[in-house]
Length: 100
Image (cartoon, rainbow, N blue to C red; front, side):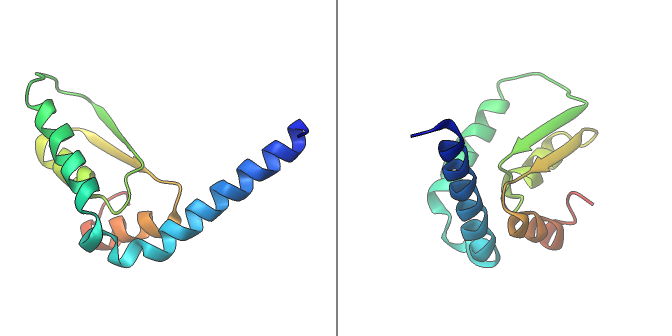
């Protein structure tokens, strides 16, 4: 496979992922049990760290589940959420007033 063909396939797959998650965004949190469990465990690990970050990046923030918890923990920090799916970012904004 040529390099350009591979790049085009990757773009298509990325676009498909983005569209799929955007479509699911409105109801995502009600069915994201595994994702919430993993997120909760990661957030628990932060309790072991004594840090006061100026900025926190929530990569793959989805609907803002972790971003909300991060904002509670790091009240003075700038929480930055990014996600490949625009629909997820929209839900984070609507539900939480995040990322304005």
